[in-house]
Image (cartoon, rainbow, N blue to C red; front, side):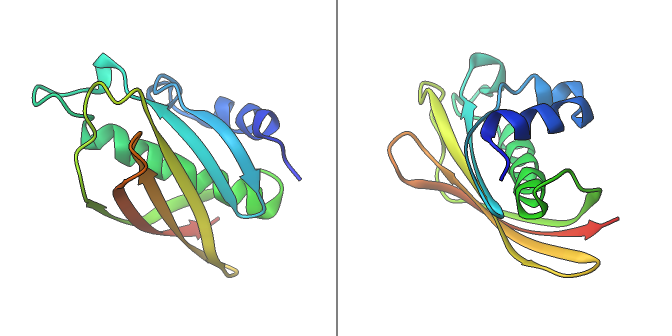
Length: 136
């Protein structure tokens, strides 16, 4: 099974500079599931004083890719086909960090399905996403 450190080392060279600059940290890895921490820093907070949705979506997408790596126990070639996200509550700019938990729900020969939860510092669900990925 991949460790948090090994998983990030495998993914990091493939990630865009934008994703690398988010400061994501892998904290837990289980088969088909990962937990990330997304720091809530001023560069990711918009004028309304809350974590911007674009940063949340990037973290959600990254969590699913890493969950697929954990599912296969190695890097895999995949691409996002569908990403549906519901923002349930704002994450304040002073929240410190959010947890992003990605899970593979079903993995076939050419498609994988997953869900991702974004949990605020208060323990409340801030966003929920479902995804479909093409396996290349």
